[in-house]
Length: 190
Image 1: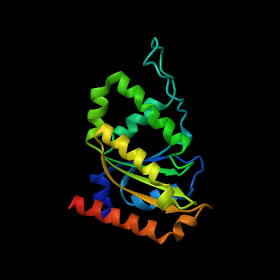
Image 2: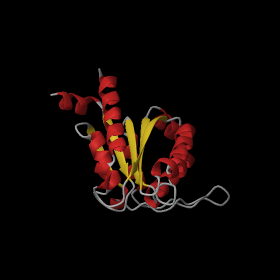
Image 3: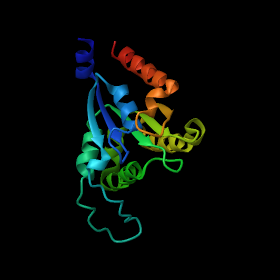
Image 4: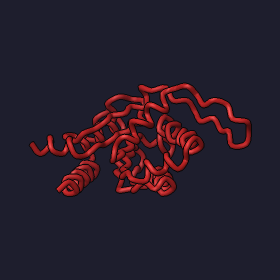
């Protein structure tokens, strides 16, 4: 019954930035949101082209791809979880391309777009193999600045250590962090 109540009262979008299905970032994110109402968004399943920068040129049409449908799904939820492998000390290309396209939404209707993001809470999951607790900090700082600009409440992050699929389930610190967040989510509903 408790999970059913949670599913009815909390909408979460998990934005998966890995090119690999069921990888470590996905496994940890699914553990985080288990039992909650979730829209699982795998960026690898959508065609999202790079941003077209029209700031200093004549505006042409933006790409006719899946960006609009994906951003609408994200904006429909109250809580956002970005789950990405740590690639070269930052977010995956899929994640970065999606966020770069936010510039399109800002250009099309900045006030409305920011108003929708302003009421949201966000978490970041970053998984790497080479000292992620230290070398994942640039990833976290990037998201911190993104959320600061958009007015999104940055609630926390998990930096996990893993390489091969399933390795994340051996990271006791990451698993404990997941449980900590889940407890906070449950408390917020009471």
